[in-house]
Amino acid sequence: MSVITWLAPLLVSVGAGGYWLWLYLRYGQEPGPDPCPAPVSTPPYDWAPVHVGYLYTRGELLPRDMIATIADLAWRAVISLDAEPVSVLTAGGILGADQEYGYFVSHGSARREPLTNSERYLVEQVLTLGPERDARVSLTDLMIQVARHGAAGYGRFDEWRRLCAAEPQPIPIYDELSLRMSRRAIILGVLLMPACYPLAVLFRSPYSIGLVALGAAMVSGSKAIRRRTQEAVNAFGRWRAYRAHLAGLPDLPNLPIQSIILKGRPLIYAIAFGIARAAIEPFRLLCSDWETVSSSANAYPSALTNRD
Image (cartoon, rainbow, N blue to C red; front, top):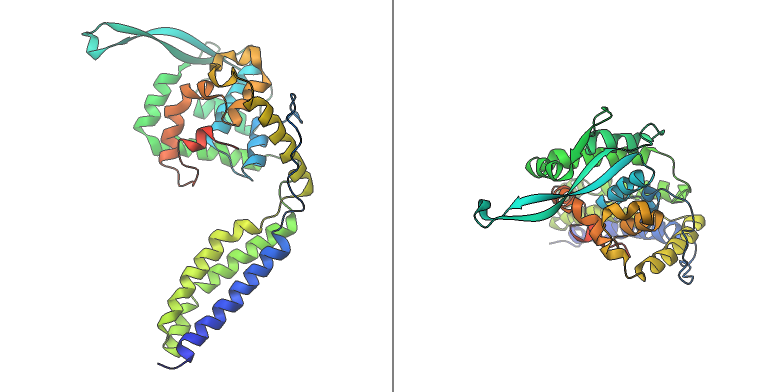
């Protein structure tokens, strides 16, 4: 076996890998360390929960961001979230019935308030709340429907995320030049994968198959080249300080979703950060089913409760 059979793919790998590494070192490094101020008791900005989610997960949205948006709509009285006692038969009624709370969604007093496209889609398509003034939806029934048709349910969530992505953000998260370089790294990885074929034919090299793995690694690692702006880094530090404050409040994890009227923004952001577990609970089956059919790496249940 001649030297060229392994030298040719090695030279291509070193060249492509070196260029990818240069892109990362030149354009992927953060402008400075995340500032870590002491916990603060007030939100640093008056942002919608989806904007906080975008900042914290670097341009991604998770089911808890949707739950936080529902809580935000309830706080603004666009919708009403009510908990009512319902009887649940035990063992088919043989052992009697237990009392549990059922959650219902209806129109609020501010139902005609202007909404963004993503908020309107959330109310009309995800929560399936009709235009009738007295429209009312049971969350339990809604969760049962999504559990039966999980892919369709996730499709609605995915469409909601797409609408959110099309709406303007309060600050740019990524440096535009680093985004272009990230796309260049993707192109490099995509071109590298089929390059194994001509190398295998010309030099009879079985080692050229390694270019496929290298190209795939470049494509999947291209997100690392995206660099946050200094403004986004500073905002992240301030929101992290506020999250530390919320995490230190002992009552937030146990507050039900209907407490949103009393607690307001702190509970909304606690849901977005995954701290308010009791408020997330009524939606857990709904979101777990979406996470099951999602290809996202943020698997359930961590995607519901962890945002550190």
